[in-house]
Image (cartoon, rainbow, N blue to C red; front, side):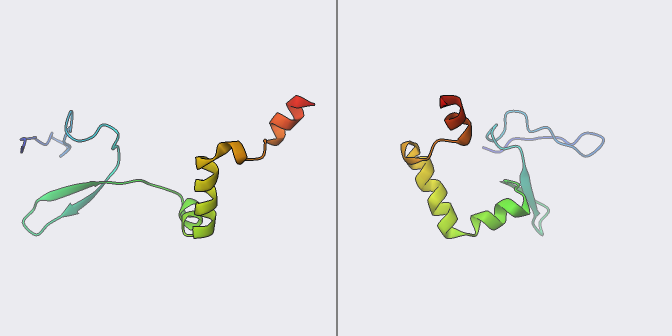
Length: 82
């Protein structure tokens, strides 16, 4: 259901209870009729984006997350056991 929001003197708008509170960044698209569409966005570094473009690495990470018991203990844990 549409809700009316007003811009303040600096042309800002408070979204208040609108939208999902987990969404804190948006891409804004302005249409020819002047309407603005906010699309939730996630910002990442170029390094993160490059890693995500490596399918084998992504599959390996997802496998480790799905089966943490198969992961090798970290060096910190090994040192603590000694």
